[in-house]
Image (cartoon, rainbow, N blue to C red):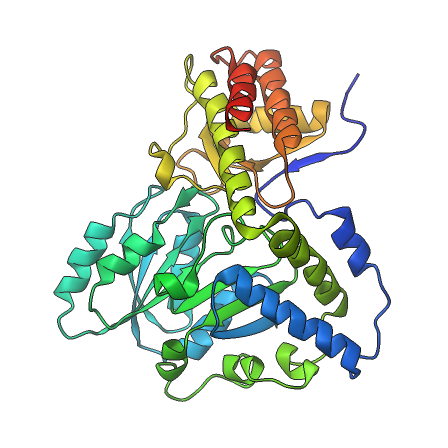
Length: 389
């Protein structure tokens, strides 16, 4: 008899669990979209989003997912034929490069497979570009598939005096890991609502520096994608390019209040780091026997929002824990051997009890399916929680 009945545990790297408070905030009828009250809520959300990103510069919101943020950035920054350098450390970096190529941009990849970026290699490549033909360096702070985390300050330092813009995808990291856009010298930052922001999918955001605004596409962006029209908007409809996503605005206001004003952003970052260490402790214990391992060896290069795991019969295990325990794990997206890889998310609205439940279900699945594994994983995870309390 299955023990899956009850509250499901969703441990996929997005959409992440949405707090009941945020769902309740969204569960409101639309007010007058031309009225002052909603316009003020929207302005408050825009201010909160700038705090989240660590910037006082410009912000353009869009109705769409993270790919809409990619598209908006490309449409505002690059003319066809422009040369950009995409640092790829996993599936999503490669997907971003492919999207840019399809829009007519000349894309060069600095590829690290599914491993973290080496800033020294970036510095060497940019030093060869004496003519300054590379318009921008693009990198995912966290590649959701490989669970790598790029060192953005080190990436910026590696760029030195090269005039390229620094464009960062923070879709899987914003609200989970430190991001200080202005302090770190990031020119464009892209994120979406369904991961660290603890909201429903459907809204994307592009923060951009004054430098990026001045160095954008020569012919200008198309009216819908034009980030300056949105960033400078006074009318609510202009922020969103038409009818605003009213319920999402209410949800964002509640979620950002929880993150910024109640828990506090640095405390949120610390919580994510501690939960990541809990997962790593369990995986290390399992890896003492058999072929279970963290592909990203250096803890500093691991994502704080999601952990990739190499594991025999991972697909069988994922199916078992869903069917028998009501726990959903992430697929091994972009892994060399996807059937033997999975991902455990620890992003957004999650706590120690949720992680222990997820790890306990995995332990049960490993035992039920006779997948070789070391003992003591749950004890190691509990000890990690106790020591960091």
